[in-house]
Length: 214
Image 1 (cartoon, rainbow, N blue to C red):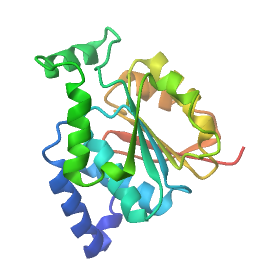
Image 2 (cartoon, one colour):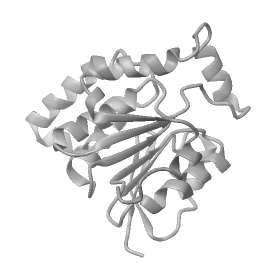
Image 3 (cartoon, helix red, strand yellow):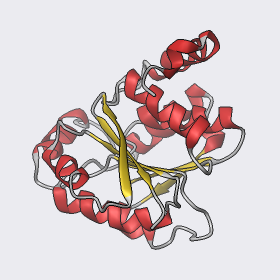
């Protein structure tokens, strides 16, 4: 899958277009991981509904949203507080450093502006709030083709996010963990998934599972 785009000059050209739009957006998802996410959503996911847990400034959101747009159907639901991580871990300090001097709502407004600049604002529905609590209100008649878990990296938080949202992923759908193997929380959870989830890809610091029947 990671090399699929190399076989298609048209697809490679599309990747380069999206890369140029993503380049100004500060974030941690590398372009190679973005290309994998794009292909999963555009070509393989059983539905065009994408849920992204943890969006920050929208770097990965833009990759996902372009995939939805090119697929011709679907929507990205971006779930975040846009207040930074507050778990007492090292990622909280990173967020505080990066948000130093930010005013209230400035991070959220920057996220929205980045979507507009990339031309994908119409493909994204922000859901502002706690990732776990937000799952309670997500419509159960809208099956999730791809769930991207990249919010609080604490093990218990990742576990909660997975079990809150994964029941809405149908057989054939995908669950993707970011920061595997670079962070212990998501890495541990990814090693504990039930047998109904088959790992199909790991690389560029993401781990992809497909949900099987049962």
